[in-house]
Length: 261
Image (cartoon, rainbow, N blue to C red):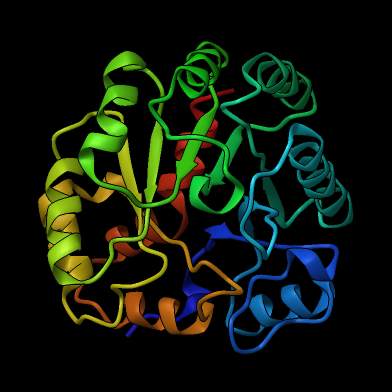
């Protein structure tokens, strides 16, 4: 069995934080970003990506979104070799979001999300405002990570922005996962990360690779909501080749980012 140290792992779905209002763990909540990074390193994960998020649900204005993005850059400044920042956008503020996107792009940001509309009240993915933002992201060449959803919620975006690379989060449990793997396999610009529910089902990753193709599967944990060690152990226990492990655990996401430069 391979070990974490055999791979250059990127956990592409996390939610780091700078303040208590941004800690979304459900059972154990790390007290500082230092604790967060220590827990990741403890299981062999030294690179991570994702967005800063609020731990309460509501309707947030653009100033609140901008604060999350500014904190993501602050975390990157503190961990420049470890953290790949993801930023938020808001469908009710498309012009402000596009301007923010350009500002962040100039500072090296190449990832939007994970976007969590049900939590931040930023609008459905296929709303007019979000589509305007996604079209701008497509022009710039920026990846988009979105909270897991059904095909009808994201298909309009995939069709309207065929060059936009979209990463769907969370396989979900069996029935949902089967549905998501099937529609991920049908869109050239849609990928899936394996954070959240699903990895405890033995054989899920092998099935996902066989259904979607190994290049479409990305490792993520959803730390601090979910255990990075448990998710990583679930991957390493699967019957994959060394090259498949290498792609899923980091190279697929790395290659996507490199293609944008």
